[in-house]
Image (cartoon, rainbow, N blue to C red; front, side):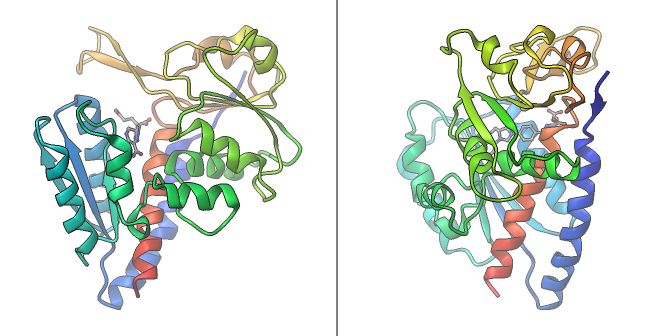
Length: 291
Ligand SMILES: Nc1nc(=O)c2c([nH]1)NC[C@@H]1CN(c3ccc(C(=O)N[C@@H](CCC(=O)O)C(=O)O)cc3)C=[N+]21
């Protein structure tokens, strides 16, 4: 039976460390500030953005949300980002994804000043990460590294299997784990929905990172005894017994997989709180660079 990796607890520890850096900045008259842009009214996006702003407030950081109707034009959004790039109160900028279909997401990301790109999504930061240069690391991948580190999981020489190849999770987390560093030095296999005989791959994993975007993609029969399982999924499953009308589930079938794993992240309370924490981490780093 697996032990839980407590993302809330590890997040609280990292946030405690950040608090003293924030207090130091404030003594110099600088309050780390995050600008958040939310387009449209997708309930999940609203709830994530609210979580990010609440976390900022708890640490005494500044945040400013700009909420825009889904009908906004790409030009209007680009103009807003241009003004945020120039705003000295904002050290970091986050444009919540996904954006409405009539807006070119890549174009919007490229308009953000790489120095304020606390998501680590700008090609300059993605490229620097790939080349091992100093940069903002994307929040979910960096949060996963922190979870592994704080849980005493050795990544050096480990067989890691990443299920999912997105720009925001699969590609960067794979990269961070195979690079020559600690944590890092893993042997990484990247799988996706078109992978032939997926189970043959996942069964070899010492560390299995699941960002497939679909509930119950990984079941117990696909997991090696003693593996460490990181569940990146957040799926809203309709559930009348809940006050909100839904429950959250990851991409992993928790009950069967926890029979096999040695360590597993829960959903909620695993990767999600770490994503938010690393966003705060990058924003504080951005503010420190502004001194
Ligand atoms: N520009 C951009 N940056 C992102 O970092 C970004 C994004 N767009 N779009 C969507 C994804 C998703 N994401 C999550 C953040 C926190 C939780 C989180 O805190 N989850 C809680 C539960 C929250 C709830 O109750 O709904 C938990 O797992 O414990 C989940 C998911 C960030 N993303």
